[in-house]
Image (cartoon, rainbow, N blue to C red):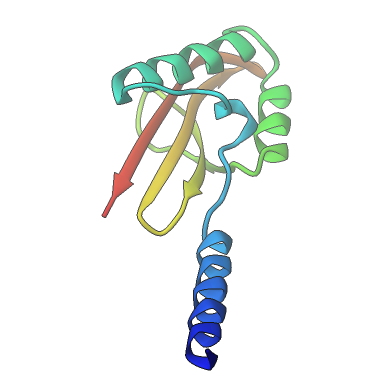
Length: 119
């Protein structure tokens, strides 16, 4: 009996530890499902719909920071900036990326991309 309780306790602690290694998707990626190609395209559409070309870049930055994206200067043309959010757990990790360029404080070009890496 004591061995069974010990096993149950160990299994419970392991489950808690694994749950702690999982992070949720960013709100910008919530509710997206489907095959990889479709999910990438839908995330791109969502990004472009929420932050269309010509809109205020400050709004984009504020929202991405609110959603815990990490923003960096992007050295790859044609984009000037990129923001990345990592989610997932031990077996699979998802990367949510938004890249954009700016002209006079306005979004000049933007794209969203999603990728997944699994063990």
